[in-house]
Image 1 (cartoon, rainbow, N blue to C red):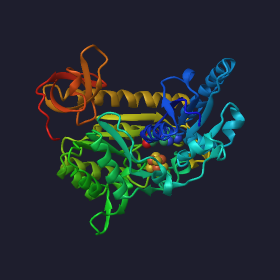
Image 2 (tube, helix red, strand yellow; image 1 turned 90 degrees about the vertical axis):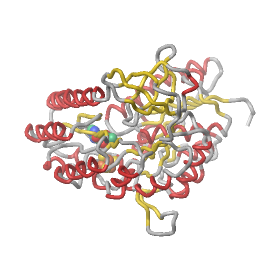
Image 3 (cartoon, protein in one colour; image 1 turned 90 degrees about the horizontal axis):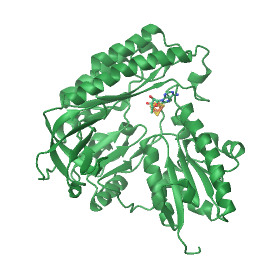
Image 4 (cartoon, rainbow, N blue to C red; image 1 turned 45 degrees about the vertical axis):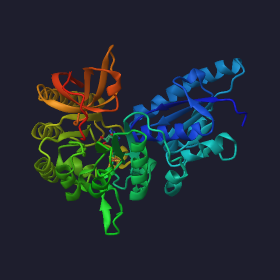
Length: 450
Ligand code: 5AD
Ligand code: SF4
């Protein structure tokens, strides 16, 4: 290598798994002499870490590639080369097709193969890698990832075997795989040593995590893993996402009752409130099962903030089915939620159905559902006015003198306060609430343990 510093720009689309993978790629490329920069114009290497979950997300990648082609040509006129890599789930799903459609792309690397990027860049490996090399992915990566601020993601589980009939994840991310408890424990300890106070355990099906325990006994589930991590001194908060109702076992529910560093927030997608649609979606649970789960979780942790994902307009969804979804949302009450129009994904069973719902019907249903979900979110946020909440500050706010952090319920909280509080937990009295954030004032600077 020449020894001169090179620059990489990494753009991340989609889910938290991609945010984590991008951080890992940045670390990996750092060891190859690349500094991360904030825009493509200055970069010798551009990595698009892509998402394939809905059509819009995938198409965005191609429009970005069009722009990158212009940048590459402009830089070439100044004698500079620009290499372009497409990583993530579009890479996995479309493989070589990407380079046919966008010849500007130099490398295509799936989510299980990005540890090969350095070798690819040196010309030592095929510029297309989309095989599933799950086992050694984490081992081959640099373990000592420097922590960027007080919160960090830690992948504990990857892939999905559930095959919901709308979803590409089982095809792009492969079968369920749990990382070992030892590796996770070591990574979390390292992060805490670097100053991390909160970890979010990540997985497409995070609550399907299962692996031999560290006590030599039977296998652990996610609840036991969390109980183990909760003992790490200096770790103030644990979160996890995303969960499947089928894997929400008693051990994990008990963890919400017993472990105070486990935050009272649960993302538990239901997708639809209609048993018929749930069946068609191959979700493997009924509404009755979901309601019973919610009752148990709320009995264990009454203040838990529930979050969910919803799809409207799955093929065959009737007006009555959609009404069932609205009713379920009214009955359950969500603190926040994500909702989407069904998007036909090639290769999935839903895409093959001939009873697709017209776009305008999907749009109307989505807007009715979102009105309801937004009103619940605002009501939840407003219910906290007057309360004092511990806030973990993690960044500067938008305005002068402002700092921003997260409540236990994952809301952003803004206060006027000194920068040295970033990285600490401080009590905040909440004085106002909007749709997306709370604001308040500092009650004390004393650090609380949780
Ligand atoms: N169309 C619309 N939404 C989808 N999701 C997954 N696949 C699709 C699709 N084909 C949504 C689900 C999932 C979230 C991550 O994305 O709600 O929980
Ligand atoms: Fe997709 Fe269903 Fe697996 Fe979630 S559980 S990743 S929606 S197949």
